[in-house]
Length: 211
Ligand SMILES: Nc1ncnc2c1ncn2[C@@H]1O[C@H](COP(=O)(O)OP(=O)(O)OP(=O)(O)O)[C@@H](O)[C@H]1O
Ligand SMILES: [Mg+2]
Image 1 (tube, rainbow, N blue to C red):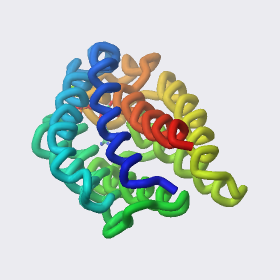
Image 2 (image 1 turned 45 degrees about the vertical axis):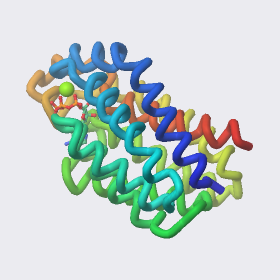
Image 3 (image 1 turned 120 degrees about the horizontal axis):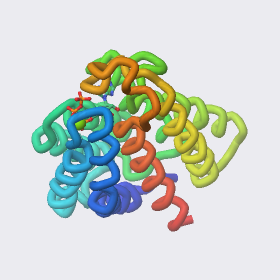
């Protein structure tokens, strides 16, 4: 089970991870974008961390909804609304829940990704964060069918996510600012795919440490 405490610890850890990875993500976005992705993620999750104490004793749905609203209001560009929508949609299945099963975690992430797609209309191989989330969702579905624990399932999903991030390198961007580069976007790792992988890896680490 994914507990409320783990969700809070995850989001808090994201603030640290995105502070540490700010320059790396910004560097990736400098190659094919406008160089703000690291700053966006760092600023957004710093704001989330500020809001956490006020909602830490609420249900997981409320915690995720607050996270999404905070990202929406504090992060500009494409990724703020996309990640904001992700967390707001993810909150639905977690409404009134103090913990989530693997099936519920998969549903939560799946609803979140549907939110990203409904906003950004990304398709497979457009070189976006969705190119990480789709294989991750498939891996979680498979893990569920194989009867894996949440910890094992997330570990497997992170391995898939890391591969998926690398798979964005040869893709030509067809969404966002990177798409303006046309073929010159080929050969670079997508910043949003990278931050999505970091989000997932940070979740897996929290769950793994608690196991
Ligand atoms: N339509 C979309 N659907 C899903 N993800 C997207 C879309 N457009 C951009 N992204 C993701 O957002 C990342 C860029 O986020 P960033 O924080 O730099 O915002 P931005 O500078 O406004 O982005 P962009 O200029 O690419 O629209 C990209 O690496 C990509 O993964
Ligand atoms: Mg950018």
